[in-house]
Length: 204
Length: 204
Image (cartoon, each protein chain N blue to C red):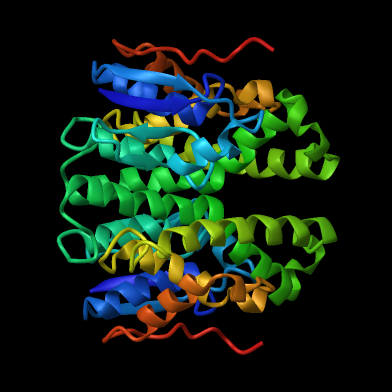
């Protein structure tokens, strides 16, 4: 059985959980706290030298890291990753957009506000720049979602799974979501898909 | 023929140029300056709402953005992207590592030092944090390259192409490359591959 090392209160860790739920594929979850230093301890670093979760472990002990690489691996051969070469490329385009232009601003701003462990980094400049760049990422998504039902086209793919977690909680990080009606409709579309499982953010 | 919109002095734009050279595949290059506001002008934003280069345009006018998504698209069916599912996943893992844990520190520190347009952002805190996180990324690469010839295994893949440009110029950005002998050997290995083309950083 697959083993997923992850932190319950993480959108990056929720992504493979959501895909595995949609695929109806069983897995074992091992909770690893990325905030208390657990991912920097020797036993975890032996599994993942980059010290991050999520981490996927296969039956034979091989491991795979990076949430979106895990999504690509698990989605191969399923409807969540198109077979057409250009459609696949568009899915990948949005996976890289998520990690480079979205997560470092929207997820990071959320973490700066939410976790006492990150409070020292939450300078006015940092809060301002993440707000500005996050709004810019949301505007790019809004522009796409005014023309297609899902982010990479008409079908629900792992690109939607990658962008969903931190977008659905962006309001709590101070982003003005009322400016993005197409995103709001897309969030509803995803949450109402049969088989959807909600993220279990921990109470704070 | 493929058209590649890019900036000569950019490692992200060099990646597809290097792959296309290795594939012996002709393309048309259109220079777009990402520093003078050209990528924020309406004509460019119509092609790429995210306002970034590189951008790949196909014969039929369809466009693809994100350097590593372009690499995945162009490498499909070539030796630069393995056919085996887990090996492919490892290549993707390193592509996401590059965009999330490497480029935002090593390439960004280089840009902060190199471009007068970015000087205002080059605060002591920013220079210190990018140095620390960049060294951490290099240590992860070093650990891998002490066990395999290339970053995703024994073969040269697009994961090497993605990590090469900013790693080969990291010394100029202040990174202590003498700490990473396995990376130095890997850089030599790539540069001495038949068909390699060097990046043409512009003189500054």
